[in-house]
Length: 224
Image (tube, rainbow, N blue to C red; front, side, top):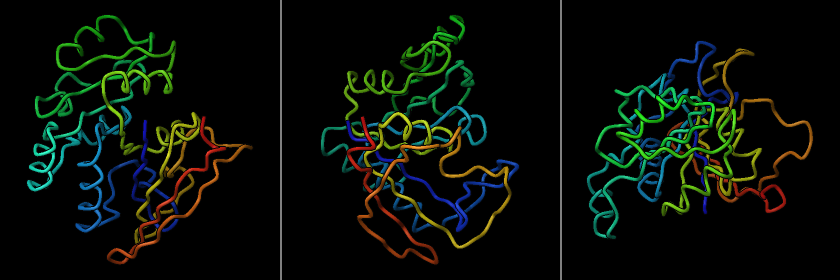
């Protein structure tokens, strides 16, 4: 399994403001870069917070990339994957539409009634007791034929993937604005690391518009 984390953050490392509303950090060039990564993935992963806040479609936008996927014998869009411990994904959420396959990863704490309702429009993977056990969920996705995942966030989900040693690559657009605020979400939220910090190797630096794209690989010692 190959896992790529992709994100856009402000110059001071924030994903959005303290109100946790969507902030436009990057422009069309970065959106196209993100679309290319999506088009190369088997699955696009977000947390339930992103679904509730933004109701994303997580589909490929470029017709040429959609055609290229079809030419490779792949579905037009990668699968959508929601990490949702309690099964809170709204039944009317865009990710449950019929544009692409959807997987909802829940824990045993998700009510059976919610799991059954979600199963009408998605494949439900149960992994973990109170929270989704990410290694088990990723193993379930791999068993389903998803070999390349793109993790789009938010910050707590990115932290959880890093903490579980599941990330192979980290690609970040750093945009030309400062958001500030101790309560604004960062690239890696959650509890944070106290030791055994994941170590990265810088592979590429590319200027894009008025920002920069940083591409790292995660060192083997930081992964399980």
